[in-house]
Amino acid sequence: MATISRAAQFAQRTAHLRASTIREMLKVTQQPDVISFGGGLPAPELFPTAAIGAAALAVMERLGPAALQYSVTEGIPEMRGWVAERLTRRFGRIFDAESVQIVNGSQQGLDLVGKIFLDPGDHVVLEDPSYLGAIQAFDAYQTRYLTVDTDEEGLLPDSLERVLERADPFPKFLYLVPNFQNPTGRTLSGERRPTVVRICEHFGLPIVEDDPYGELRFEGRNLPPLISFASTAPIIYSGTGSKVMAPGMRIAWLVVPDDDIREKIVLAKQGADLHSGTFAQYVFHEYASNGPAFDAHVHTIAETYARRRGIMAEALGEFMPQGVHFTHPAGGMFLWVTVPGVDTTQLLRISAESKVVFVPGVNFYPHRDVHDGMRLNFSNASEKNIRVGVERLAHAVRLYKG
Ligand SMILES: Cc1ncc(COP(=O)(O)O)c(C=O)c1O
Image (cartoon, rainbow, N blue to C red; front, top):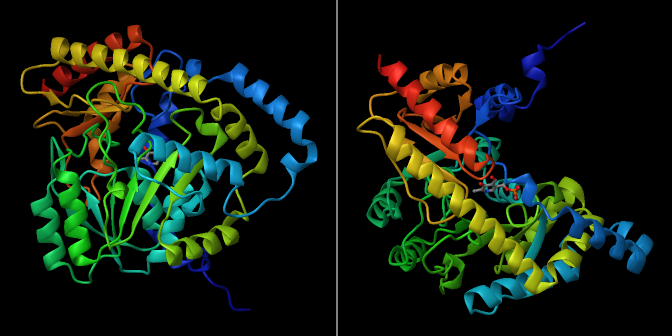
């Protein structure tokens, strides 16, 4: 009887899936005395548990079985309307509920975008470094990456232009996180935003704008999203309830004004899961439709994270040796530390023994070619633990340097 090897049973695309060193590393953080700056978790003590409980009851009382039935793929009309209205209010440009697609976490949105655009060998343009979850989502489609250089103000338009001029094959889209980027915490400056849109329009390159952190701004003024600029090249905007309500709800949204792209996304989602959970959508909407309470909640989250960011930055300045530098994010959940001359994957081994963990920066570089960075999360640890953790981390850096 003919047999085939185990490896040959799997689709070729599985060979492109990267083992998540982060997940392995995070096992260490299960130990109670380890301080973790590694995960990307929101502060659980800020989840509005009582209000979500009340919203769930209200939904059950008002809708009963209708809240538990199969539903349409695009999302319940109430949620699509809420997303369009909130974006319209925040950005002073009309967003249409018809262009909103509710997804199961923005991670699903990234997978669906990959599914409809990417063939094996295709290029995607990414910031360098970039969000690891996006790289994982696109990897499954056997993609290759073209990287654009970044500085303190986000991606460099000149670098983007150079990459697009030389690209072969021409990429399918640009993916970027313009606000308080994961992993660096950097924000694409207001001056660069229209330039990036203009360059992509010139080349006819679609943009995938991932904005999970935009509402968590600590200081400065809100900047218009790329999707608010007129462009003949399509722009897909991704937002999520994960950071402003709770990630376990898995409620997120794509805004896709282009009808052809939206149709394909609906079909891809139908094949993936038919629709996002009806009950979760109703509960999310019930909670979030109380505008003032929702705004106050988002404000509390931003205030709390701003304090934690401040304490982390202060501790880094106080404890880290000369030469170490770090970003000063104006929002979000992460900051990025550069430790020149240090391979932070090696550093993690030492720091884990000192009971503090982080994500080594190399994981966020699509070509895995830069080793001296690390991503620190400041949303999930207490103020006291942030100080203690940074002191331990600085000690680990000194041990590494001998
Ligand atoms: C840039 C970025 N995009 C997407 C996600 C995924 O979020 P969601 O919980 O909506 O799937 C995250 C989560 O950390 C993120 O940082």
